[in-house]
Length: 286
Length: 120
Image (cartoon, rainbow over all chains, first blue to last red; front, side, top):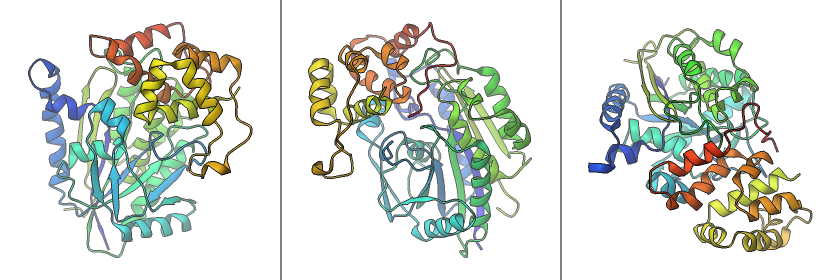
């Protein structure tokens, strides 16, 4: 059976590439600290020696649109082109390409549907910065095949937070049951408190530092009981109008397992939104 | 109220560099052209298989035609689409990084949660 080499949860910040490569007067004052934290975080994946990456993210109205919006979707394709004109325009993200692992995609689709998730699938998926940001931060050589898992954290009506957790648990169980000798890292990115297109955007910190403090502790200890007790689809509007991305962190807590303390935790208080990085090494991952 | 159509306008303009420039330079003309020619195009279907029923209200047409992102926010346009397109339209006119984004926030400063519903 496959080995879960690492479980990684992270914020995804589309400005990292530009900040980390800027020089001279264009280089923001926080860039050096940010790069140091990312390089340390990257090492937590490198040392896990993964063969394939399951990448949990969310399309930002690129390929998926309101005329046909899936709640949970898994890509099944031999290749994924990546990034879009408007991400190049706004964030300076380059066009990329990632190989796919169709066998693992098929396994997760079949098993996920049989486990009670009526998953959508895509045989031609262009992924966006929710997938490529963690590639850039954690595996910049972009040399490993991926299985993209998209969630709807963006367009109401969205699935309940508990469904994200349950999907995370299901993905974990399915990967562990995959008849393969490969080492699989499961990586998911979301957000802490975040405001986009509202009055609290682009402030000196995230829009709700108190939520962020609690959320980091929930994730670091995979405290699903507290997170599920406090977080609802309605409550997530309050810390910032784009905070539903926290549900992708809840999915990753489901992957990590209830009350599994992260082996690696770090954060960085930036303008606009807080960065946070977590890695778990499941038993038997070494 | 047709929040879906507002969002469809923002979405289809934002992903086309030529349309971003056209909307920047001639907002009302672009809105009128788009409503007449594009509003009923279903995005993954051939043009002949179009819808027949989508149109803006006068309030929506006016807000789009004036680049009035405060009004669009208040009409329940999707805030991610709104921010992304308006950065593309106007960030270039500001000397300081993020100055447009901060002005955008400040102009919405009279809002506290709950914000207008973005459900479609």
